[in-house]
Image (spheres, rainbow, N blue to C red):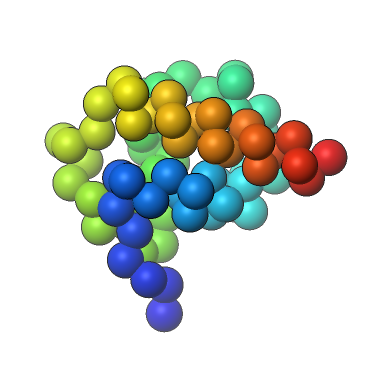
Length: 71
C-alpha cells in the first residue's frame, strides 16, 4: 500500500513522477499538467487547492534531478 504523500514531499513526488513517466522531460511539462500528474500519484492525499507556483517549481526541479540521474 502506498504511503500518504503531501505537497511538501517534494523528493517522493519527484521519484514517483520519474518512475511513472521516465521518458517525459520535466522541463516540457506545464504547471497545469504537472499539477494533474501529481494529484494522480497513488497515495497522494494533498489538497489540490493547496498547491502554488513555488511548490510546483520545487517539485519540477526535483523531478528534473531524478530525470537527469536516470540518464
